[in-house]
Length: 398
Image (tube, rainbow, N blue to C red; front, side, top):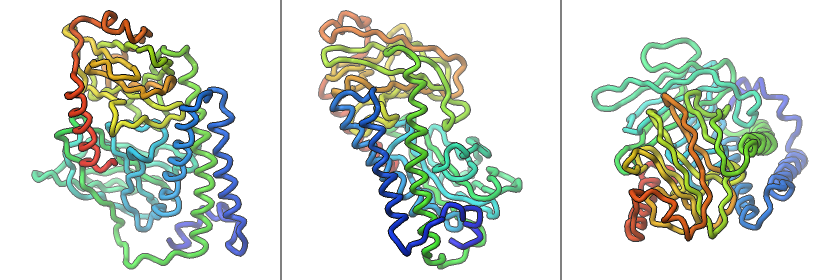
């Protein structure tokens, strides 16, 4: 990356590589992450701490490529930064998230096959995700034209362009490209790449200055992002457990509204969630840890969307959170996590109904459910989960 690109970031590199000082600063930032697990009074059991250790390693695994490797607006690439293995910041199981660095001095093109995902969206933002307090939205677009063969070209630039155009900010910034899948078995992912107009190859070699700046950016990521995520969790705890509110998330889509709840469910209990979903382009419900990262949605049924959902005869969506499979079609698998987060998404919904949540003994669940509640056998569940795992691989989000 050339010096002009980094001109605005020179204050991020007060250190040199003559001594290990910058590595010491990185090590200190890593060590500071432990406070999010062992200094939080809400993390009060071994299962929650186990999730916490995993969460901290996910933060590290997610931070390194977005700072040390993929932060190059001169030669960007679409990097899949949230997957079934690396996740943080309330990721949706239905979504595939990609990211790329940009700079307002350049023009970029995203080209390839649009695929058939239920929804897709490109947003441009100011600065870097690591500096989330200043990571402001510049532009967003989700309606793109394709040719008869399904090919798409999206132009990213400061000045307006004909066709599929997304405005980008002056100076350094980044884009987030989202695809939301409803029918996991049939919808095909987009196959796209991003390039900069006028790019000449080979790309410049990595310099000491570049690595210092990227390492400082990594340190900033580890200091800023986990603290921001922890702050967002307060809105979940604003209500009593097993009670949901409808709210917004600052880093989410403008047209998305989120249901937020902290659930509590002992191993001999079940939670019954009931709602008549609104008319909406998309809706889903999903389990998360107390750290705002998703539970294992690729191998277990921890999420259900509006296409996957099954309904009672009266149009009610009834889901059950429990630790063992109750044979209910709309099961959300708590997997021995007695406390966690429950999140609901409504995209462009006509209304915002709030689900009810009832806590019952697992032994009394059958009597508490409506007699027409959809059911599945153990063999049917196994097959559904096998297909679920295969779909995750097929759309490139493993």
